[in-house]
Length: 330
Ligand SMILES: Cc1cc2nc3c(=O)[nH]c(=O)nc-3n(C[C@H](O)[C@H](O)[C@H](O)COP(=O)(O)OP(=O)(O)OC[C@H]3O[C@@H](n4cnc5c(N)ncnc54)[C@H](O)[C@@H]3O)c2cc1C
Image (cartoon, rainbow, N blue to C red; front, side, top):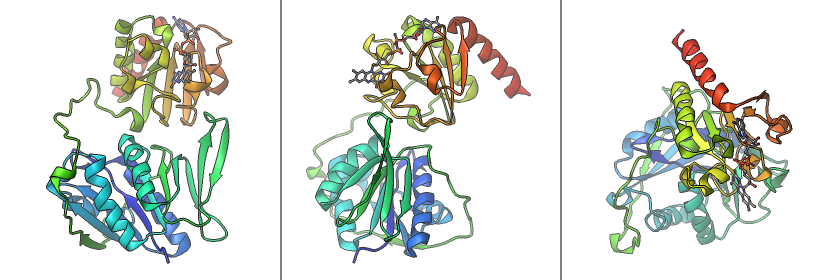
């Protein structure tokens, strides 16, 4: 019988990603509810040093899939050892972050495991029959679906970054480390990562940023995004964009927020010159606080905004930047 709550950890530059801490904290809560063990798998190269942090956040066991060919993420390299380990141990629940890596890895893995996958979940719970119940927005956020897995195991879900709470770490907590034997043939990995180019800016990942400053067609040109970058730098955020901006070639697609771009869920989303089309709202409406700056008082974005500023963004944004600078300096 399938047993245990498992999380697939993700690391970047040798640090566990924030969404993994969210997944581990959520996993701990679920494991306590069903009275089962919680385990974390860390795939990568030289990842042994990351195990302790997983115990601090609630893991009972950590499986290390440590192999030189897993230095950079590739679906070919990661899926087979993950599949072998999961298939052998039959966990009941399997969670990962809905990051680019999670979105790429989990569909292939769920197909290999012959189980269902609920993507981009904003809530996870246990129902009356000790089954996972996943909550996920559908139809561009217009409706909420509750997903259960009546038969297939593991019950597999990815979680939207920045939505679930991270538990308080217990630095005295320890657990068991299991080093997984791998037999990865580098020749089976069909993709070669030649170079990773870091994007300019604060270096804060858009999907995981706590503050996102986004610009729409109202920015009027690529050069004007400088004022959003200045604001974002001051508050330690990331700059996003609407699809119109991306289509116009003012920003790269990696910065697009919305149905066909990234889903973000920051503490604060500042929408500048964005009308608030449903496809844009699909990517940011779960933000904790939304501030909209738009010169049209009838703009749809004001319907979802917690705070609305009707006016010219070219006057308002620089004032906000200066005010934030002053407040943060204090
Ligand atoms: C299948 C499909 C998928 C899509 N996916 C996405 C997606 O992922 N993300 C996305 O964003 N869109 C997406 N879209 C497009 C979406 O429908 C809208 O066209 C788009 O979001 C509009 O972008 P915008 O708000 O920047 O531009 P507009 O709708 O043109 O709005 C510009 C706003 O700027 C305001 N403004 C202008 N000047 C100023 C100023 N000086 N100061 C303040 N305000 C000003 C205007 O009042 C206006 O409200 C998708 C569409 C389709 C059909």
